[in-house]
Image (cartoon, rainbow, N blue to C red; front, side, top):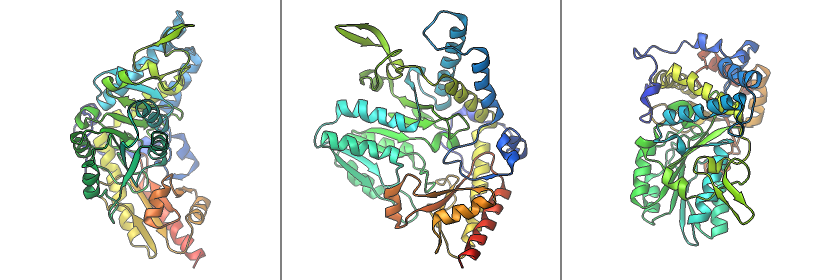
Length: 422
């Protein structure tokens, strides 16, 4: 069994110092959806939410529902205090230097677009090089395509090897061309590949590039320390880490955020407005125009409390054990091809695979008949599908509440699909 721990974990998420394993049975009682009997193996798409998160959001709506930072009455002051307290929780969660480096967004996609439109439009010029990878989610690829087209910049991609790891030789060759920006994912949502963020960032910085990391799959499962890795920007979403939809975080180094113009304009992000012109607040508020997703931010704070209460080492060990079991079991099925690295330190709890002779959507439909939920299709990684030479994959992904019996149900469903299409 592989038992690895992310080097980016922050000490506050250490969990039980004795290293006790997760009590998955107890954890599942926090998630009402499992009372339905569903086997949920699609956490890379969106995670389930525990009672603690839902109750915290309900508390806001029932007890102090008011807008933040715009009124002097007690309800608003309480809402503002709760809202800003979460910013400090996020700061601790990723070990940022200041809570002013924590920008609330609607999710990873919005965070990456914010960097592309604000930093990119201001700093890139014709002929500049942007380096990306073929394993990226569309959210960390399409914004750079649009930016490159607008600025007439170059956009080049790092390929993967046959086990789904980045081609470091290609990465190094592109760095020798002195790119302005390097963008890559912390963890591939399709392959489960865990990229060596600290190493890649150091190499990119040595070449003079800024680094943008898509942390949508990394922050929920591995934790992350932005200071240890020295990334310039790191974006992640609440809904993949037991929190609500509609809210996420963009971390940016303070000096970079200070120099960036606003992405959206309106209320809350202004310092003073006159007919002759407007001055803006300092980060992070400069990038938070309009009424924010207040209840969702508060729910994110509850999700962080929940995850840190369990501890990332225990969560990682649990997912490693599940990945080992699922990988070994799937490997024993005839006609099943698994994509990405085998279980190990650079593999997260994501298994994408192809079942010979059966379309991924048909596999998913048959599994759904038995209450097994998996993702099927291109996983918002169409260029990667072209690289793998498949139309799509079936993807099973695991989290802290996943139990081995659900993987057994997956295997039984796959055998049934093979029987039907034999």
